[in-house]
Length: 408
Image 1: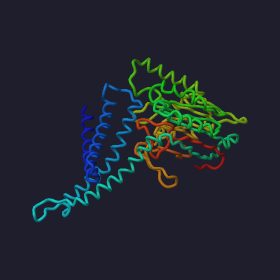
Image 2: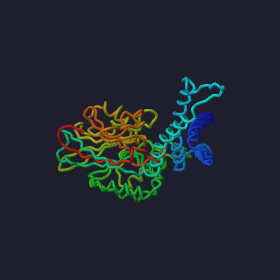
Image 3: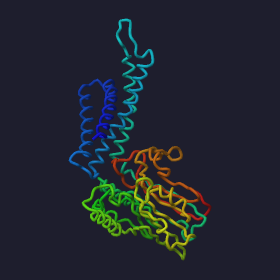
Image 4: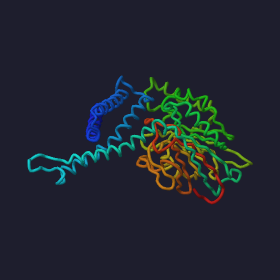
């Protein structure tokens, strides 16, 4: 309750200051009423979805409650910040708040109006971006292609092509046709193998049922392999019993098998071609901090030759950072996901790549190289919590392996 009170107070202060800019720039009274009605409805719906009726499980309605709140709160923070700075400047700096000869206080209302208009103009940019992210951006699928070169790649696998998808989060989908388009996009790459790096659902295995037929269309010549992500274990909702939770996980394993995935639970497989081979290794989720640490890398590589060419599937990139890189074996390529690139950021190839995700994860999106080993952190196929994407688009990764001098 205390946290909710603090949150409402902060929301109220931001709203009050944003309204000052809104009221100064727009003089129409009914628009002022509309401002407050919209603000209170969005806040009330957010509180209801997360606190009312003892709601505990996170679903699509909660995601949209978050989305609408963010769509209003982030743009309002801009005029809030600008108006506070202007107030401090006006009050503290002589000349902007002054007493006239008649004793009347003045604060240059024309300046105040101009600043309010500037603040609202700037706020319109994130507002429009967030609305686009909710309505269009979350299904703005991109195919990102990389070529990675390795000196010790088996000759038979020169030119071998991998498609990686990650973080499907089927419980968040709300547009079947867009998901169907994305599945077709994966198949259009005609890769030799499809590798899925976890989080098929948000919480419950049944979330995947409406999309079973759709994802069963995924095909690759050398098969499909998968691992579990932190959300696949059902750790984030309440269960009637531990048995029910265990049954949920077993059902998800069955679903993955029915879709054609070979689910690797701290296991490995070989892909063979012309008498040569490379190893596909899959660990269960291992994440730094409070995330589940079911991954057992030593168990996963049991029986492998240390000199095998290795592709590791591990959902959380912190596993690569803390467990894989220091390991005795050399893992040529690790495929991860998990971060979603925070579903928000700015990416302009060759110029800028930024997201708040970088404050939490050292490796948060794209290709990285350390100690002659590569990792690709997929930005995710689906979305979670916030029902949209702004600047960090859903991703299908295509990686071609080449034999030669190491280069990214």
